[in-house]
Length: 494
Image (tube, rainbow, N blue to C red):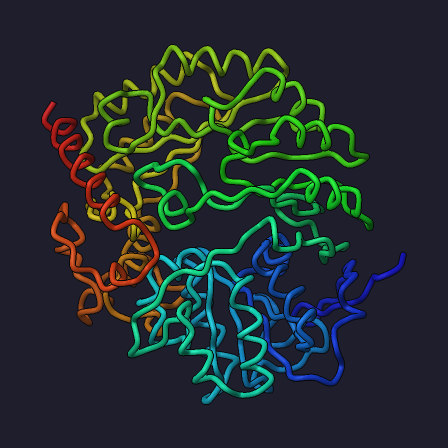
């Protein structure tokens, strides 16, 4: 097979299909491209794949690093210390301990670290004791300037970009890519000797951002505007797929709102590869879509009602009428698909509300249930909600008592995730991946980097530093926050 190379993940040789490797310049300014998670996970990160392709297109030599690569590049086993510039893609607050640990262990003084992703965009502050620059928003409008800085060494010019935040300069606004003008990612690397979490798939991004405003969701408030690729772009991309891919993985936060959703699913159903689609909004789901989703080889459809209790829905800005939900789940099952449902437990919610959710969900009979506590996120109307407690975890366990296949996201990790995401002071250097979440929270609180007392109550007066950035609709966030708080008071007093 052409374009197969051998990479090394901490000394373990792995075959990788990589159609871009031959274009990676041998003698050129270079960057270390780091993803703070295992290689198998990194291979399915659209942001990581995009950065790899764009740097090569700009004439920059790229060597990739992942959390399990032991400080050595995948391509040449070059030590991380040899690079002057590290670029890291991170979309999740709990990546930060791994990022800090990797740089601490394998980096050196004087290296320049640039970080980007949805979580750093929403609140770059926690990273500013570790990163030299945080990119706000999408990579496409910024990567050219980043490549220029790598080549020329003009980092002052890069730091002055309106889409870049640096220590001591908390100002800027997010970059927004025009998907119709940005080329789709036609060449992607994929491992052959290890199995990625979603299978050996080709990533197809049909939309970016989200048109909805669920009050707990980062993407719904930070990822706007909702953007869509043209059908011709997507068709050309699907027709260009070559290599050992086994499936097509659809990247979209709201596929049902894609104006060409039906046509896209038809294209998937006509492909030689199997396909997969992400969680779907029930309001946009038609029988025709369901038949096509079944035809592409998908076995389970994920839906995220979050709640079937109207009082909770008023807090979350999302939720379904129980009868509507039952009808749609019945339609999904009729075409032979299993159902996975995501539910949420709110801080202080009465036990009767949780039990009501359990009973109404049981009527629908999903195959699998995943339950999360509310994790307050910056730039969302519920950023002022209190951190979840063990009480919410006990309520979430009511789902496990009722459903054979149910998992509950641990409150201890939800608390740490929220505390990092809402941090008002830089703290990344204090994070350790092997530290227990409760110990990490205690340490950060004792050092004055967070306030557990403040995070433990509902906060309506906001003077958070990240709200100075041009990242979201502050007026809309505040109005929705007031509505959610009033709805929450009604819920907990009922």
